[in-house]
Image (cartoon, rainbow, N blue to C red; front, side):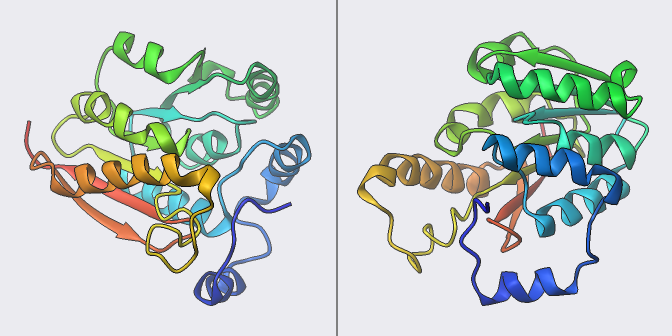
Length: 215
């Protein structure tokens, strides 16, 4: 099952990728799909792997643990300590097992709960933040995330083009209007906040990449 409605460009980009971005994690990816837990697209996973390799973070914050697929990509391609947040207890339990099986438990801290309640209590600074939680709440989370980044820190956000709905190429169903409106507020904020420099890429379901340029 796919959570994305791919256009021709994305299908072409997928055709250029190897059979698996991170072969040793295929079971983790499959587990998420079997459980109905959203998982990053393969083109998004490749880009995440690239960003982690470029940034070489010491501390990573992730919102949206899932079964641990994206977290493990970041851990396997860096020496970072990962702090990850998710409210889904079943997914968190799977993630704990997957981190343990990969030998990454010692480099991982999982916070089970609503990110809006956890983020105000998070301390320290993070070289890389990966936002892959509920799209309708990105705008709510953004102020906390910017404050948690040092100058030069990177914020990567997934699903920001909402399967081409934000551009109007696909219609927004009535049941999704609120999510689209809130995501629109986030897109305006992340592209206008003078503390960060942002570019949006049509990778997977859309990813925004921001660098903090001033406090």
